[in-house]
Length: 233
Image (cartoon, helix red, strand yellow):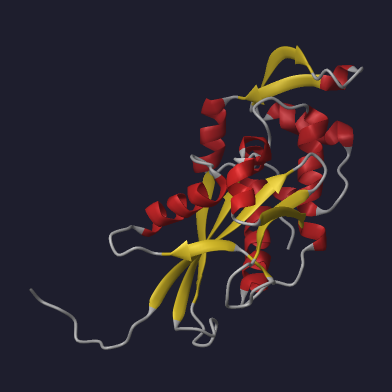
């Protein structure tokens, strides 16, 4: 059997930036570390690549082990490979970001890993280069959510237009005109009325919608702009 002669040992880690939405704010799933290094500090959720795994499979495994969630929107973001990024051992991190429906999480699994949903607006200082990872992921989320409608991954199966507007206002930290937003979102053909109403709403704005899955796939894969004016830095 042929072997490469390179003598160095370099670990490959996968760090997952997991975004959620609680109806008001964008949340970030973080670990309060109860292990070394940096015990007691905050970090992203992650793990190491196994010898027999592909990167995508490893990222899905880590997401499931830490949250109990599967089949979520998961995208490779960037590789971080500064020599001294991890003080213990030379480690390259391949970073993914995930968009999850908080209502579908496995609460017990998350608690078992000492993880918490924290507001992105009040994010604590993170270890290593994790702050830079989050900034890159947020920039990517804002860009992709304007072009490809991926923001819907953060919503429950049924939602109202005001809930959808709150989501996009939270992503971009800006207020959107209600009538203009409603008109534009309805013109996309993405929404299908369920004929149901939000029981907490007393107005017609409480009508519940679901995604048109065929249209959604088109907006995910085709070169179709969703809300291009929202592509903020």
